[in-house]
Length: 587
Ligand SMILES: [Zn+2]
Image (cartoon, rainbow, N blue to C red; front, side, top):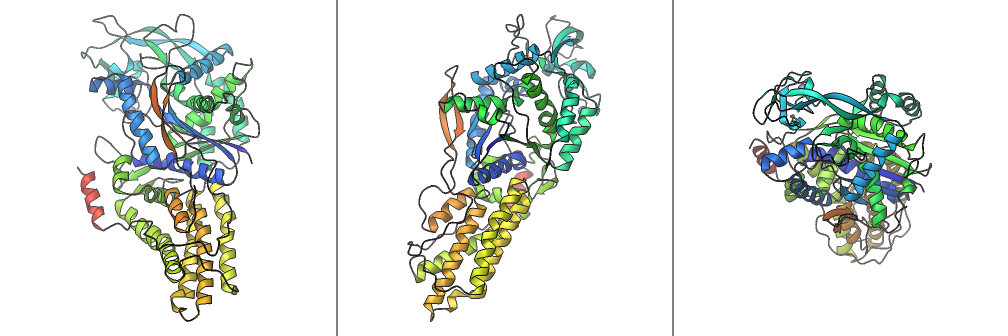
């Protein structure tokens, strides 16, 4: 057994999340964490909503609410959506907690103390008519990289590059259209070049990473520049230095605070469980492993910047929290598109998690993501493919096997029948299913979920073939043999259900119960309303007791267990849903 940190990218709280957001890292990190727990590891899975930064402030301004009101709304929406998907976070929190502020400020101070934060004079914008600072979000102009004419002072929404306001061509104030004046102002930068050698040496020791992630990361190190970690903005974590702490026009840059969330959420989890030091076992034990899940646009933060922060905080001078572990692996996914187009909320090329879950089961989406998601290639979500996978594979393959084996046993025996002498076919099938624990498990441990579920479904196909070949419905005259075939089939269903539990936890719990099982098979997260440990404000978190539930191992079914006629576990989707959904997309 080892300790495994599953650090999952933080969804940005400026709106509800769509299925593209949860396909790349939300669901895959849950599949991984569930498998690792079942295999006996001590998993700590943490994340939360990312709630600072210019886009939140801009949207709050547009809606006439405060940033806090905006993030309170979307934090709750996102918590509920992730709960609906069954994502088993040990803690899903947020970046506006007192605990997060303290941890971010501690890391900032530690890096500063160790000499890795440098002050630099840069050009900041002021309004000539008022003489006041113009925050980045109020400056618009043409992107110097792609030529987009409405790039913001901190970022171009067209090409995604981070910008400084003085880089914009023809900059103008969004408040009154005037041309801002640029004056010298001081900001803090993280001295990334100071870590280049250590980062290179560390990346050279990494094994098993997806090759594109490793290559991309090594290329980034070749031209590292100091990176700004403060911004002209009021909404964010205050800068914890004398003469800066009280300023209300400068804050820590959102990317710097969000990436520290993995650590602050682990500390909050520990504080909430009554053992405030418990987080150290995942962050300081050299045997502990840390896996970081994100989309490919965030690789740089996890394979270069976050490791630099960890290295810089850990030495040369020891800091209050002590030395911290570097990531074991950065698990990055590719992009999901929707019917051949990029997801876009403004153009209504989107399906939000909430709307999806109102019409379809969470496990139908989880299945699609596992078997056809953007694990190592950009992939396209289409409604016709979603329906085909659901109907032909989930319903006709797995659901049908569950249904026909349990209903035939229920009808003819009312219980799990005892097995008589086993034939060569019986023992061959059982051995093949048992081999699935190693086969599927090894793939899951290596983040090859597409191959893992394909292997699990191949085993399901073998059991279906056995069932058809043995044709127990033709054995009315030989009830003993009929009982043996059904016993073997139900045993195989029991094992296949375990193999599929990380992917399909809701269905797995039901199938466990249909087989006469009681208690928790696949533990689920709960939404708990908690008080901020430092400010007393209340907010919802996801937590859960995941120590219960099935293990990654064969369990013998017990002859004589009562069975009832099952109702279908998966829903077949009508052809009409494809047209309905496409009509919704086009608005
Ligand atoms: Zn651009």
